[in-house]
Image 1 (tube, rainbow, N blue to C red):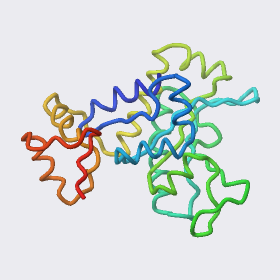
Image 2 (cartoon, rainbow, N blue to C red):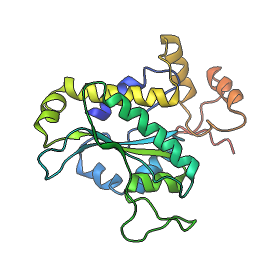
Image 3 (cartoon, rainbow, N blue to C red):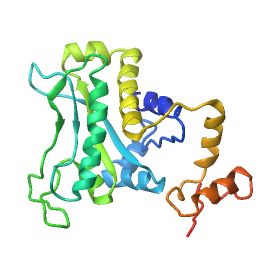
Length: 231
């Protein structure tokens, strides 16, 4: 539900399209996208700018509470990309404290591989699959742990009702909007955005402005899989 609420709110911003890698609780869909690389394939096919994995935390401890965002290691592979992901993580974490969540264990967390896995440059890899794949795919990626399901304080405030879940989604949305510099869209802009992102694979193409105009004028409709295939 957090993902549904987040998608609905984010798409009220100008030039935003949210792609969910999973939209139902069916076993068939779960099996299809279970492996994290498959989820990044979906993101890559839509030319996504960022990849945000949403979670609820859990622990055997009695006192754990609050939010954290898992981000890449600093100063290793693709250092600039790691800093971009860390910046996204900071924005989301900052907004998650607005509804009253504390920052668990400092808020921003990293974890290095425990089996010696390394990146192509020989540096130690990140432990978590989402962060690791983001670095490999050259995509800004973070994993958000909103709060602890086994903390009564967290769960009673944010997990028992749709209102609480919407507060988490709203915080995620504001953090993402802060990072990307998004602005709320007018009705006219929302209609324009719907046309612009109807075709998904040309956003970084040198001819993007001309392709936008061709779509808006109805000169092109692309292929059946929502691609333009500019090359």
